Length: 415
Image 1: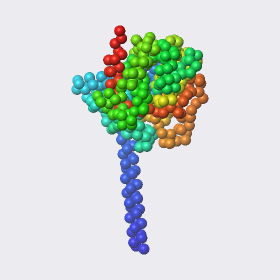
Image 2: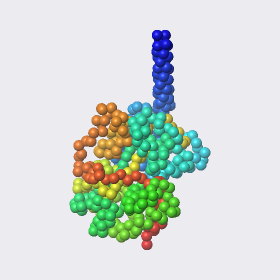
Image 3: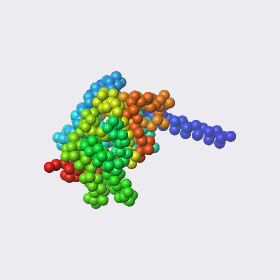
Image 4: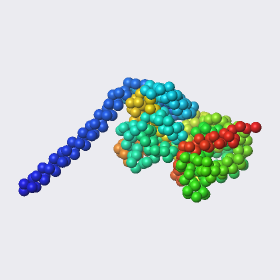
């Protein structure tokens, strides 16, 4: 009996010690976040983010209102034409030994620019996991939340949203839109001057070119296709790029202005559709189509769809530069960006339509209800083929730079 009592006493003691250790760890974790809240409140945050879409700009303004209410943070949207502007600024600050008072507190970033900033040690490391809401992305079972264009983020970024290349067309101008890249070539020849794409290094331009590069090499052996997800080399370029240039050489004479002129920005595609010059275009923000229809910027006959041979898909992130003046405040803003409230609001088609990065299984039943699909206000909000269009992973970031440089060398100077 004494042995049993001693064993029970020991078990209880071990349980109490374990419970105390867990409680202590949880308290310390909570205290650490509370310290961030204390230091980060009542500050300014300069959020450098692309400013080319009115919907996105309005969403960021809504975020500013929310963090002002919760933390007395003044969120300033510094509108960028290209994310490289923020990269250049942080790099210049580092060169000037400005290691503590940087003017970029938070930056919307992914892919090539992330790789460049990480390479030059321009980002704050190991902070994303500090955010309480980061756990809602279920990173242990969703490795995409910690990889940007295949590159491990190492806690230097927090995911913000998901998007995929989406095509749209004027159904009055064409009865049947092309459903594959090869059909696009045939369609353009039947409708000369009614399609084009922007000039690299515009993000939408490189997205279209990477989609084409992946699809055109689909029949290659797996070992060669896999080279797209490794840093580009002279050898891999020789194996993978020729089919892209051959395709573009045949396509360009039938593009808008016979492929002799390319617009600088992807946003101009929408304007050309609205003006009736183009009949087919594409976007990485599918919700912009019904929203533009509602604003009478696109015809009521606009329709959206995904290509049957695949949709280039990616997750976009936010990051904190290594020398940000208000790092704790930027963490508070990012944690709000990952909140169910902010993610659900962003997903609404009439707000932005950007897909959530949260795992619904990590949310309460009430929170899950916030993500229920709403009644769609216009047929263009229905994305045809979405369920059966394969998701194409982004190639290694080096390919964007290589494609842009070689494209400009080959097509950038017209006679």
